Every structure is written in C-alpha cells, then in structure tokens.
Image 1 (cartoon, rainbow, N blue to C red):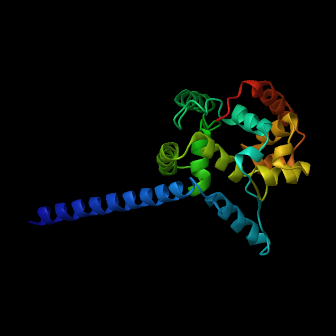
Image 2 (image 1 turned 45 degrees about the vertical axis):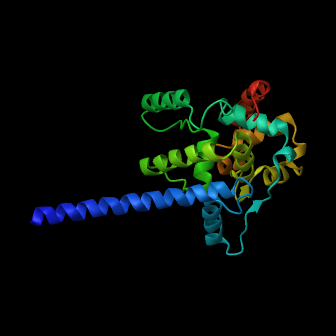
Image 3 (image 1 turned 90 degrees about the vertical axis):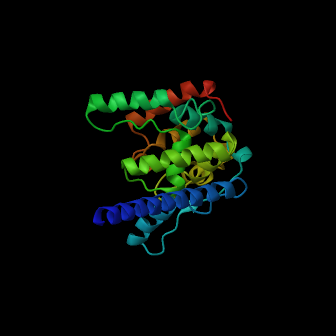
Length: 233
C-alpha cells in the first residue's frame, strides 16, 4: 500500500514537472512569435548588465537603438558571419561540425576554450537566458534555438541578433556600437571598422579596454580575409 502511494506521488511529481517544462517552452515560443513583428525592448543579457551597472551607479543606463536590417552595413553583416558563424545561412540552428571541433579543442586543452555556438544559439542565450555555463542552460538554449529557426526567418534572426548583442560595457546592438566607437551610424561602417567590431563579439567588455592589442589586429585581418565569402540571409 505504501509503495503504491509513493508510486502515485512520484507519477504526479513527474507530470507536474512535465507541465512546468511545457509551460516554460510555451512562454518562450510566444515571445518568439511576437518578435516576428516587434523588436525586443530588453533582453535577459541587457537586464543583467544593467543591474550590474546600477550596483555601482544607480543612475546607469544602457545604450541601444534598434535599426532595421537594411540600415546595417553589409560590411558588418558579412564581418559578424565571417567571425562567428560562417555556415549561418545553411544550417538549421546548429553547426554540428563546429560543435565537434570545439569539443575536440576543449578536450585537448583540458578546459573550455571554444564554444561552437551558432548565431542562433547565441541569440537564444542573449534573449532569454543568463551567461552562466551549465548543461541545463545549454539544453534550454538548444530548445530555444530550434524554436527561433522554426518561427523566424534567417534574416529576422540575424536582424534581431545584430540589434541586441553586447558590444561593450552597457553597449548593445550595431547602431549603439557604431556610434560608441566610430561616431557613425551602423549603415556607414567601413569594412575594417566592421571587422574590428566583429572581432569584439566573443568578449566585448575585455576588447573594449584593449582595442589595439596584437591579438585584435590579427583577428581583424583574418575576418577581413573571410568577409568576401560570407553569405548573407
């Protein structure tokens, strides 16, 4: 009798967990559908960074300004794809070859030195999740990335990505970054300026403090060489 009762409680708990899981996914899906037509006002990353800034300065704000896809330099579009996800237009949200290479590199180094995340996965993380690293977060990131690919076009995914990613301390999106570093609009960026911004994406706050490092210069040269072959959505 006690065993049967315990079994029923376990079953109910599993059903409850499944229901919560489905509700959470439905919540994310509803927001993604909304983003088909509306730009995100704030992402999870923006909220977290703003909270961190306000711990030091209660009046702190973040810099961000949405611009449509057509008003972002093609140089920047090509540069970010060349730097972050060369197969973006072809994959369905996951670059399995890139993930395998990143895993192999991490095993060789004995620590995480490469992520293998696609632009779609990065957008999933930026929109809804935290920067903390865990298998649970990576699993949720994968589910959201699949939903992004199913609900949005490639161009819309990329348009949102370029408008919300972090590009420095309190700086988010292509327009704010172009104005912060070059006093230009995102539409006016040259190839070299775009390549330098793309080189910052993996660690924008660190590279903001060291913009002319030897590593950055080398990375910019590599991105410039890859840009002509970058396919745009």
